[in-house]
Amino acid sequence: MVDARALAVIFGSNHDTTVGFHIPIFATSNEVGINNEEHDDLLLLPSKEKEIYTVLNDGSYKGIHAADHLLGCLEAYVGNIDELRQ
Image (cartoon, rainbow, N blue to C red; front, side, top):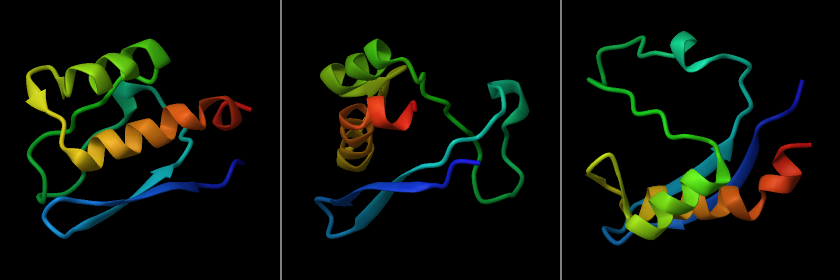
């Protein structure tokens, strides 16, 4: 089993902070869902490098604006993608 790895600490524009983690899970998107009442929707981003760069370049995904926290986590992910795929 591969351990979770912290990839980045992102300090947001509203004085908030996010820690981006890579947690490998062995499941398909059909097996992942919301199991509480805190959230209404779950948006699964593609894990292909080309598609991640599209989100980074466009600043959005499926019409949803990508804020500093998401962009910082995605940049950290693609910056470590070769190591994470081992």
